[in-house]
Picture (cartoon, rainbow, N blue to C red):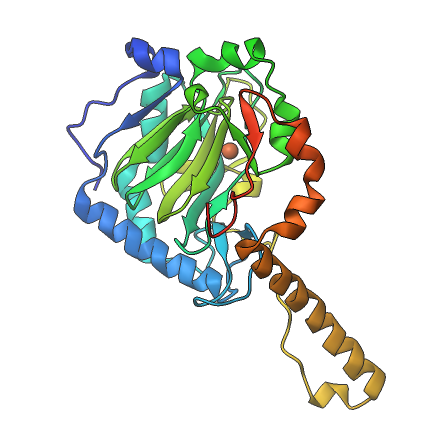
Amino acid sequence: MPIEGIELMNFYDDTTSINKGYFTLKKRIPPELARLGLEGSDQIVASAQRGDAPSVRVYRDYPHVFGGLNIFGVEHLMHQSIKSEKFNELFRSLDIEKMVLNVTGWKGAFCTLCRIHTATPFWKYQGTWHRDALVNTDDSIHLNIYLKDEKGFRIVPADRQPLLKERQINETALGNSDNLLLSEDLYDEISAKAGDILFFKSWLLHQGAYCGQRRHIHMCFKRVDNNSQEEVIRVCNINYRKDCDPTNSKVYSKISISTSYNENSSANSPLKVRNLLTQLKPALKRGLRLINYFIPFLRIIRERHLINQSSSKYTRYSFLSNTIWQ
Ligand SMILES: [Fe+2]
């Protein structure tokens, strides 16, 4: 059931959007459909937390409490091991590719990224400032389709981009640590409601910093020109680049989860010790990470060079980022 009757804004119809390089379509998804999508995404995230997803991202592998892995992103969302009919219904109804073409005015586009972003309020998180395309290249666009109210996505608008150079912001340093803060007058922080859709040019400098709930579908579309050689596959009204096929069974980046210790297979002693050590190492790492989450002294020692190096009027090292105190 495609959503009718909502006039989509084009980037080039609105001066503010051109200047900022991003805009939010408010209440773009009807509440009942957003709820259906949220329920579907809950099912997918729950499968991923159990370790069933073919491709997941884990910010920091903390001890597996609160139901499993500390999942930050899930990809290949229509793979048979995690797929959800409710979630697919959201995709079919939204007709996202058509929406992207309306917004950008492009003749064609294909999807190169489709991921659910999630977080739990307990594991606070701040990512690195980064761009997903070269500055001023306008052939790709990102969108966040919000399924919950959330706050924490930060973006440097296009019209503030020149200030980064003027203030001699070291972007390489910014990209090397997720504990660096940028002066607040340089960026906007998006406050979104479930059902909103944010569009932003992929080249804009951005960062995710979350202390509360987070659930959105994060996508990237690239413009297709006439002689594009890109191989695509069509699923739920969207052309995906082959390696982003959401149904694909190929395992891309499944994180290694320690397998349970098998007593039967370890009758011989050296093997038993080796198995135990294999299990112990990641568990120890998770334990250290947990200690640092409350008292980040090891991290501060490791990153001490950044404390002076990156400190300026416009950037500074944050002792509290990525801790319970964030
Ligand atoms: Fe990004």
